[in-house]
Amino acid sequence: MTALPPFRRRWPWLTADLQTMRNDLPGRLAGIAPDSGRRIEIPVSDGSGDRLAARFHPGRAALPAVILVPGLTGCEASRHVLQAAAAWAARGAPVVRLNLRGSPPGRALARGHYHMDRVQDLADACIAVGGLDAAIRRAGIVIVGFSLGGAIALRLAQAPSLPSAVKAVVTVSAPLDLPATAERIARRRNRFYERWLLGRLKGETAPLWRDGPADVRAAVLRARHIRDFDDALTAKEAGFRDAADYYASCSPMHGMDRLRVPTLLIHADDDPWVPPPAVADSPQLRVLVTRGGGHVGFHGAGSRMPWHVDAAARFADDCAE
Image (tube, rainbow, N blue to C red; front, side, top):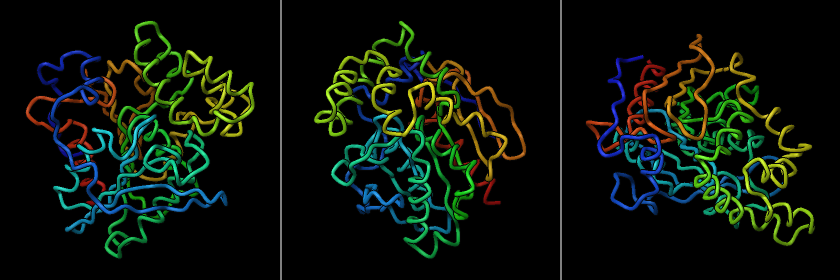
């Protein structure tokens, strides 16, 4: 991989928690306008009639299209997605800001909701993006996934259904071990984070449980941890027995030896939510674990853009060469 300057935290974002919270704190950040790009709708192939909402920014150079996949409770307007979109668009690459099934910008387009087993949704999105432009079909696609979106991208990179247009995958702070991630986010020091995520999850999924069976509704409202929520709703929505079954079946770590395209994992050693990946470099895999950076933070010295953007771009360039 092309020589990459090491990550160094930018003042005042000097702790894991400040790095993690930076994108959700008030203040101006670099990034593309949330309402920019052309709205597109992508049908999914499971026969449900659900569609995914996305925003497409045409490119001006012969570069692979970049599909940006947000994480848990994220969407096309998440600040890390807007930052990455601005950086890739400035390089001239076509960019798609994808929303996972049922996330707020596409809530009216889907009866279902995203989860870790919606791998085919991402495959459908790649096929649809490849059909947007002949130049994209020639140059291919790079998937850049954040947190849960990165974990779904990893599962697709391991799957026989991976579309041939996908040339590389980059993940930022992706959970490979779902049981370990659920355990870490449930720690006492993360209680604020977990309450915040749970509040957003319950609101985002309300159409699924608000008018459903009384026992499901009660279990969702009673949930105090992400694992409780996944037991009450996510696992059942995904067709699994419970959260333990869901986590065991959908953890990307089980298939890291089956990656079908070059893949880069970017992670911080102090991520408060997700343990660093317990995998090593291999022919299809490059792992970058930085000193500091938090969860989808990487606000580094010397640039207003997060460090992970440059790392992903250099990796994509190397794959293209």
